[in-house]
Amino acid sequence: MNEQYRRHGLPQPTPRLSPEEVVEHQLESLRRNDEPYLDSGIETTYAFASATRRRASGSLERFTRAARSDVYRPLVDHERAATTPAEVSGDTARQEVVVVTPDGEEVRYEFRLSRQRGGERDGCWLTDDVVPME
Image 1 (cartoon, one colour):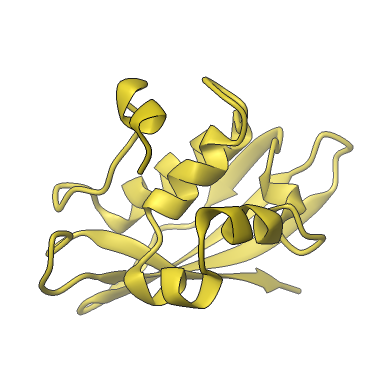
Image 2: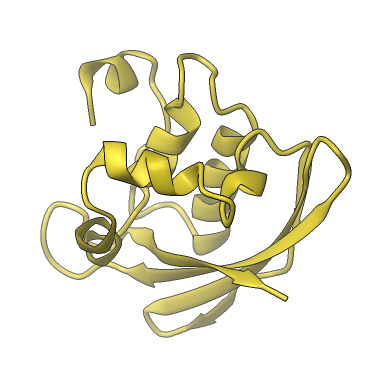
């Protein structure tokens, strides 16, 4: 996390957040992606990415490019989102999300999360993957 992120007090993982709250933080941040600064929503999503996801995605810059790809672009600057209740099983959770783009298209995703064990983010729910759904 960069100093600008901290200075603006943007959301950070904490063990007090439920899987639903983690997804909600990411969706709200992506909806207002450029507030308070350019791509801060994508950076928030990266802040809530698990170590597994970060290893697969690489740097924030690479993660940002992926977030702007055709697959994930509907999440960035979406108009609104609806979620199902999270399905939690032990240290894993799944939650379905439907986002509505500015042109009215509905796009479905499944957020897959896990509760972290050990390290500085011990006990935090973080996103392992966001999978497009048909």
